[in-house]
Image (cartoon, rainbow, N blue to C red):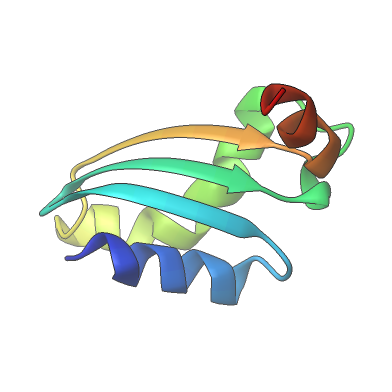
Length: 80
């Protein structure tokens, strides 16, 4: 699986999310920015993303995922 495929999948499933994916094969690093995360604890945010990846993880297509999740405001603050 390619990073671009993971990015496309998440952007289609998470309306309005900005997604950056790096990695290849079955090991990916994600940054997901969406206001859907507003007021949501970090573990729950990750669960929201995993919901869209679980089928690929179960099939072995994706083996490892490392992710960071941000709201738009958190992302802006992170950038400087």
